[in-house]
Image (cartoon, rainbow, N blue to C red; front, top):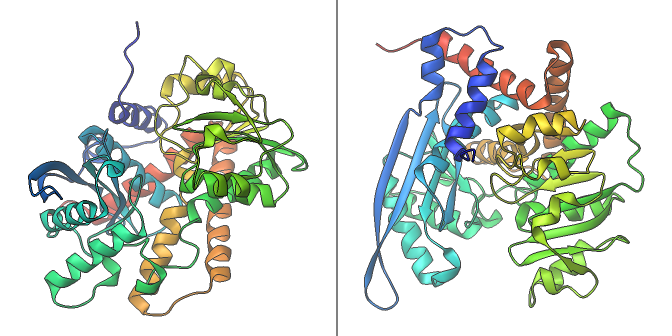
Length: 415
């Protein structure tokens, strides 16, 4: 049986295959493959019971040649160092691809946030911040929300960092509450980026957007907002999936009604749709599939069963390398993750700029600026793919890597 690549090996595999189309020297390749800094910390937390528990935390800075490191903090029971390293590298390529002046980073704590109290969550966040405090800052590494974290967690990080500095430092994180210097439009930014790239894909493919059907895997922040935005644009959401299961209705599912329902119930028990086997989710006959959950969801095993015309990767690394050629042979157009889901980091950049200037934009301005950047990035990738006869993933990665490599060569190696 073929061994499944972990997400770090998968990310390196994709990088190596992309480097083959670029004229890079061996030393540059070695430089790009290695994270610049890997930090592992033990996070002691006083629990509600009075006992002390120890959680393992990480912060990885992959590359800072184009600017300060940027990347979210993930709270999840399955967090590993390899996962954090891979996501930090993906952040480097993502920031490069949309041409914002950041490098890539990622953080994580091995914890199930649903199994601890709010007070324990705050204690964990503040102690984790203390453990990494010398490695973060508005000029060197700026965290943001990710799986299992939110605006409140960012507020605790900002407050802890600010107390240590002796003055308020809003630029140390993005994804903060609006009241503390957060940006309008940040919560749904990743989802809007997904939609903007999807609409651009429909244009270049000559597909009429009328009555297109969509299946969304994941109904968290990204998946739910993407479903709502597409629903408002007239797309028909026919299948949805989360950790509780999968639901289907060929006549369409109203994601607003579903969101209201799951405040007290679960997605799989939604009365206006029928349940089906979530392992068969990617077999759903539809025009567009949006994987908006975790890594390694579309594999060599289920890729032959995908019936969609377009896959818009709202999640990070949802498709394994061995699935890519299968999707290509099936003539499925893939909008790769480092392009498709880069709306979040783009608006994080806007928030960082606003915080540094102490001048805040309207939601309309944020969304218009986001649209311009996402559309421009899409067409750069698409044009490159046509010119070099590459698939969209290879094209996106080649463009991103070449920009980082060029920055590295221009700066040189000190001393």
